[in-house]
Length: 300
Figure (tube, rainbow, N blue to C red):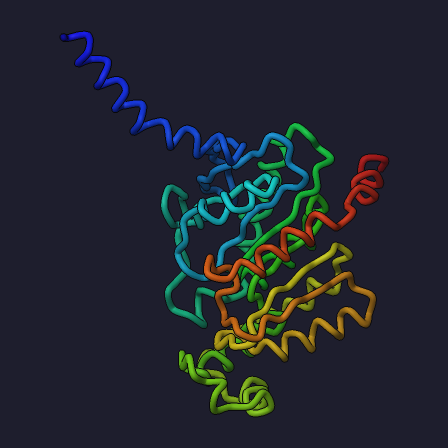
């Protein structure tokens, strides 16, 4: 009778534990926690490693105090992309100080954006040391504020092979603030305003803060790596059509930059409710040929 009791308990325990084990194995990737140094502080993150990755990416944060993006990283890992995601400085297990939430002063000033770009590069360098296949292309994937951070990082790190930018600005920090103040968080903004109206205010409204603007085009002009921007036309955080206009100018100069516009989406282009932007980004990475760059680098 006791043996039957213990057998039943064991079966119950297996029923509880087994689905989680199968769940992890079906994704076919491992998760390893890592710590690394950047500008005198320790950052904490996780590496998600598929068995046979075809590319690797470091996830770069938006402006919020964000911990490592595990769920988004899992989505990428399931597609065969190795990922390093980390807690933003001053958040979670990472050291340092999170600069915020005073938007327009310490959050998007040049000093903080450069500091965050150094964190991203430290993550790239750490990731490279963990990859068994050293020729695996490494890219940056980021959101929103990362549109200013990633080009700075890529301009200073030759290991970065590509960028994927979800709802990321190509305009200056001051222009973005003018637009954001004008839309004032109104989700129905585009029902009552035109693009030319928004553009006028973005270009000419008086600044509520005085600080040196960061222009991502300064770094983008130095890059020769492919980049993909994914925009939602109803975005009220960044003026998408003006950003696209800037990208078209860079494209006309021979930059390998691409973009996709989603008419029904807003600033959140990585939502689980609409996986189209995510799916397009994965296919774009799969279709890109980074082998020639890697071969050239290895021969130098």
